[in-house]
Length: 488
Image (cartoon, rainbow, N blue to C red; front, top):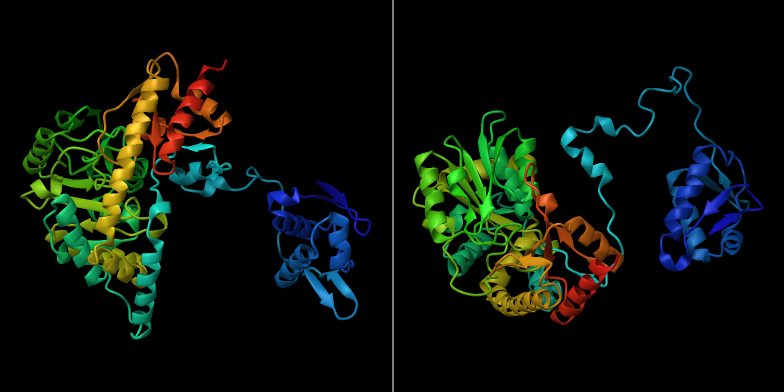
């Protein structure tokens, strides 16, 4: 809505009160009017009650906005008189006056090239009718009551300590719990000394990039399509990148260059296609690494959720040459806000990883580590994973059935037996981008495969996440998608 005050002649554009953001909009516009001189120094502003009545907002909103302007120094309160626009500081005579320059807009050109696209990052839209976003677990089923109890115990224990710095490698109890957990669930052979706790998988990748890449020299082989943040991390570090294709058996080992220093792969549930690397490919990959003196980064981001059949051995399990860095995260098996991951590293690399963490002062909160250590050690994580594996298996089966029922001639699902998402190819000549746009208009949130592929590879497909959507909503969501894409 637009309002004009009879006491100061400016237009105020405020959103509808029920939409939220009224306080922020009013504060922003009044501040701008003061800075730009439209509200002159010394001008008496309306009383909060009068301003609230004029704009149709609550008095508490008006009072809160005045309090913000007062704390920022834009207005001043005069006892018994009211609120006035504060006097502006005089500009020093020696200060250069602004003049028109070649760059007369916000100086985004000063950002490093690799980060400029972030300026135009899309703003999340309102909650959709059907949410098929990827990368999110169903945290509504997480036992937060248990977590709160363990967190309270960890806080009480922390209150009895000196508060000295925590171990930069990670809480020893948590590292012991992680070693036991991955040994039991993924047959990863390690002890606590091989585990480095990180602030999620993203930090794990960043630390690995820091210790393994020499700019302009290190050759890195990456899956294409693959995980964009991992590609970006290596690219920013100045690595020489080689894209390796994916087929029904996983990473195409025969495409690896003879001279390669690091090979990054997601063998248990390839991101984003979802295929699992075959046993033969796993052995071939490790043989290539051994023959050509390469290291391997194994991203096992949701391997705990195997939906059928016997899980294949992790690369780290098969490795006999101390060449594999196994990266895991609890964001998928527990809840996203936890932001705790880990690296199981070869013994020779652990000191470098710990030094990299120390240099950048990226410590995972000690209370969260202690809470997670108890959560794992007392068996709560194993029980939660078992429960969620059954739930995700039901959603996976429901999604496949719905795609076959409503879109059998339009989409081809990629076989997958793990994780929290399913990919599907859009049959030509139709385009995944058109499907995504049609879905958005129908209140369906879904991603395409395109952002995961790097030129010249072009992927025409969709990715269906089933962590945020109930099984009962999957079939109606796919039916709505089918109706949306059939509209002209």
